[in-house]
Amino acid sequence: MLLTRVPRVLTLLAALGFSGMAQAQTGIGVAGFGYRNPANTITAAPGQVLMVSVFGIVTRIPDPVLPVANNAGFPTEVKGISVDFVQGPVTVQLEIRGIQQSPCPPSGACSPATSLTIQIPYELNPDSGIQALLRIREGGAPLADVVLSAVTDSVHVINTCDQTGIFLSVADGMPADSCTPMVIHAHGPLVGTSAPAKPGETLVLWAYGLGAIEHPIPEPCCASPDQLPLALQPFNVSFTYADAGRFPQRRLAHVVPDYVGMVGAGLYQVQFVVPAVPSDISTCYGRSGNLTVQVSGPKSADVAQLCVQP
Image (tube, helix red, strand yellow):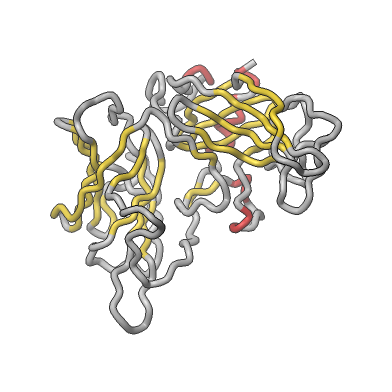
């Protein structure tokens, strides 16, 4: 059953690219806001793709830089800036998939934030008593250490509001501010009001941060779908829905997904079957869905709102 679906993974992965759109920002440097002191710590799982933003880099980067991968992968240094992963005796120089800065105003003091898109290596050990960190370097000299709060999983359902610079071709034509979750029909397109899901069909959800995998992806990949690694942690999928009166979400089902695995470049897929829906489920309108899907792991969870046909 898995063999009939996973080849689609390879087709979509070939469409992986990088977007030149930078997040709209002001030139004001903000270290934090709200009611708690800011912390120089980020939560991350092995293999997680994320952005890390730091102050203090001298080099000015007026436009986003989105390196192109070659046979050796992405560069480990861009504009003189590099990132090392360090945990005890383990040091890994990380590939940089994108780098951008918040723009400065025409006049006045400015300390731009520099954002780097990276992938946490699978060498990260959440069970180790040794603190892990990211060491940012400029011109080879250490600039800042960012402490990692290591967890087994940190689930994030990819959506069109993500500013990592990475995109999937299935998102073409979607408004960037729609925050549409990357959940597709088995043969495309994205699930939405114009292409709602149907009870009983298999959907494919794209995510980051599902943690350790059973084996590395071979090079080259992949002669067989069996070469794609599965996630080591157990994950489940639960569903809630809004009724016609749009009252608080009601529980619908809780299932084990058909497939949870990494398909390359830090991208994970979760494949699941849409459950039967009750007759009083609300209708979808605008960008609002009527079915909430939650992917849960041992340490984290994230949700996607979908439109399902009554």
